Length: 339
Image (cartoon, rainbow, N blue to C red):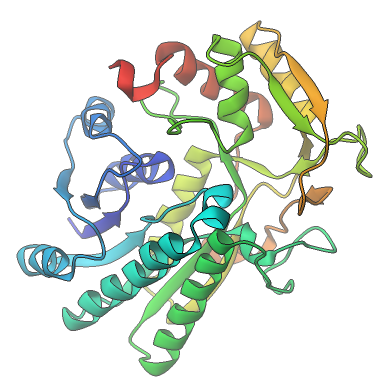
């Protein structure tokens, strides 16, 4: 079976992708420093798949550790998730984000290059589009991240583009995620944020389970159907299958490609709350507060290219996203820490 190195794959998206690549016959090797995730994830993946993925606790900035992994394993491709990801934290600690995300990726690419492994699927983000003036966003929409987290993703995209131009043996897929939510249908793995959630769905779920008193909605006077912000939410399992499709595409595709992964649909904050209340049977206490600087009214993807390039399409709707997120939260009220 072909081997794939998954960096940062004890995290939310990486763990779900690990399950999907195992189901498709790949042999995963996870490298993660566990700075914002739990080793318990490996046990959960084994319960879902019947096999425990190989795991190396290491930082992607550690070239010696990476060199040992590539020397000992016949790796065919890399799916690169590892990186810090909180927008607010990146504003407060920009050097930490650039050093971890950008310098870490350069170290990884250097080791890959020396070992002749030149296929990568990169975990990028819709934040590379910045404050979009028009929606839906296509892959040709203007790029211009507005915070250090987004800029680190944009810098890495440019680095990968330059690497692919310099050496035509490289095959790279840049996957620009929109808003990943939901959880595996088993309820065994899901989103387990450290501290206060930065994303909407886990915050709603923690209010529903009683961990937080209420949700703050930042603005209700946007030019949207109900005044609250509209975003493109995508089920994390759909996102995971997108990575599998990208790996398969890189078997034959040469060069570098960037593609959006979303549903192509926008849902408002209040709509998400209403659906979550319906599936959970819990009232979600919330209050309207002032807008956050930099937030846009509406942001959702044009997913035409993902369909034609990857033969991929998201299939799980908003109700399924909420149902699976609630099952995960209900079964794991304290996240992995409660295992």
